[in-house]
Amino acid sequence: MVTLNKSISSIVLIGMPGAGKSTIGVLIADNLGLDFVDTDKSIELECGKPIQELLDQSDYQAVRAVEEAVLLKEQAQKKVVSTGGSAVYSSAGMAHLTANAVTVFLDVDINELTRRIKDFNTRGIVRKPGQSLTELFAERRELYLRYADIRIDCSGHDIEECLQQVIAATRPYIS
Image (cartoon, rainbow, N blue to C red; front, side):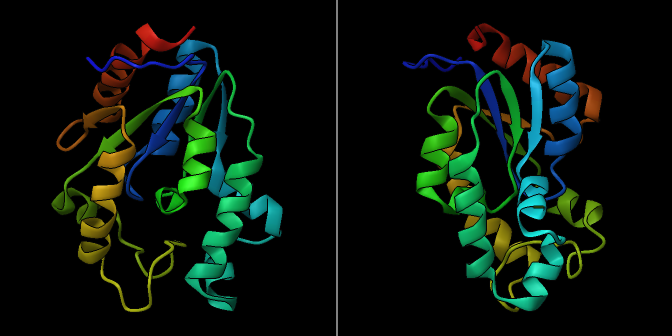
């Protein structure tokens, strides 16, 4: 188990699109009596449109800038925060979110992600033009591992199994 040298009041979930951050995040929040926030939904509320529409109207860097502003505004106390898959590109946003949180990487292998993500080109996934899911996975996985306090292997596990793993791993840290 990881030893954290910070006061913990929240859980921040990171990982690829399709890893189950939003689904598992809601269940963790319910189980531990915490509030829940999905930063992708916060971006959409901030801009008044779906992320895919933002990507269609601008570029991935503009969406990342909006995402960073949303991350920096989030008050992550006594919450489970499900981040967008691209949140890890913002070192300032991640530092802000994780200052008083345990960060959990929901790790899913590329084969399972490929099975789960059927709408890669229309799902609102922030990526470089022409970047494939495999390329995006390789680029982001290093960042997820860098920010993670805890890594949960979700490949081949159902939602309930992943939920129980996250709760068991984070319960000692939540005050």
